[in-house]
Image (cartoon, rainbow, N blue to C red; front, side):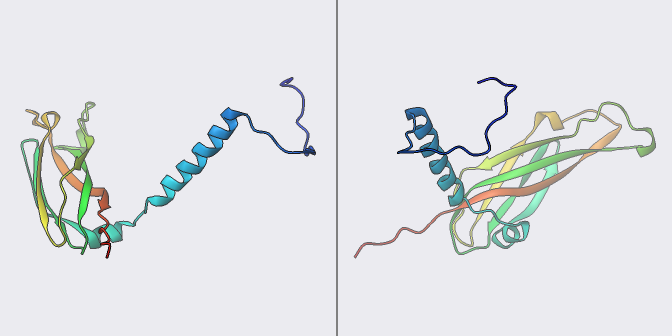
Length: 155
């Protein structure tokens, strides 16, 4: 096909439409991908706050620790934590050129039972610095989790 030519707006097709194997495979893959995406449920930050809470958060020398509390009636697993290390300059008027701020995402693979909790702790060598021109402010957020569906009993 000539790249400079225009495509017709409509074109009639008579008889059955035949797809090549590659086109059929792509079509099936799109349907499967659409169904997989539809199985995911997106929740708002308010929904996360009603389900999970971060408690007893402590930071020291590049180590972050705390407790994830499951406040729901369902088992939760695969909790993803986003940990943001923001550098606060000692003198905001004379900031340096080497900002060591960074963010990491950690996934907790353990299950948290309904109304139970899970202790977590991570160390980040890049947060340990001998610098005297500022300090890290650490923010931890829950960005994703999975709920475990209850198995139905056969009678």
